[in-house]
Length: 352
Image 1 (cartoon, one colour):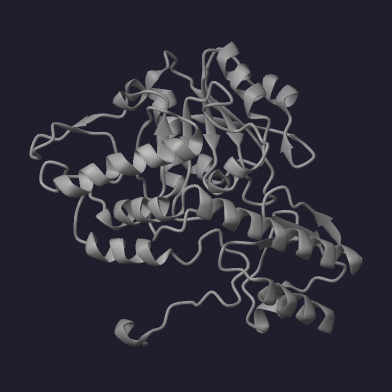
Image 2: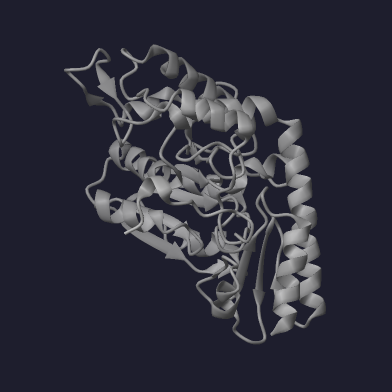
């Protein structure tokens, strides 16, 4: 068995499937400094609790919300589960359901199972939400309607304003999952955030394109009252209640999120977004010119239906690639992905 102190982590030189990336140097330093603090006990760890307030304010700036409520989660899965929990807890029904497009992240299936909520998924219009199909699924027991702003398989963005209107029509909450897309979307023309629509809650992950150290997700809410539905009494702590799911959390994610956003918002993120999109378009053109059917890029993610299945062969050559549920090759052009990497990848594709 390999001893942990002698093991080397996966490097990023051939990682093309991950929606996480190398943290910004300042984020890495901040994570190390706050590794043993616990924002789940703000009465004891006051400094990191203040940093969490800063993180929420910065995430609000990214997501178009002037006075945000929220906290730093372990990732998009926790944030999505908590959003469904908020919607369930505030609703007056014994038979709650959540309506989402078929592109919704698998964390919503976890949420439905954990929380006793029915998940209804609507068929798509292409690779994004079909609001008319979603409208056929909502009813008086619908507690939440979900939109995806940067799907994990194809990088597509749903029509969030129309989804928010649909949620309002049945007095349900509107939740947007922008876990991956949230740090790219501010530099596009998409309407996806609190400033564009009556969004109630939103998932956005600093540990993805935000370049914070893992784990550092984010849950934002339009008002603190929404988070109050999550509050649990904490009698042995100095704070009297807690809204988070995990309780004890390392302050590393909180501190690194603040450090990354202070270093990169907005200019650095804009530059990274433009570079990532340039790389994604280059790859899409390269694959298209070789006769592969390409989907995207809408955000810096390219899916391609290769003429010959090559995923196993590419992994044998060291590439970390994945497939969509329909079997297309999926490449995510994260900040660590360079043009040189993509040229080498295409050269290996040509070898087959």
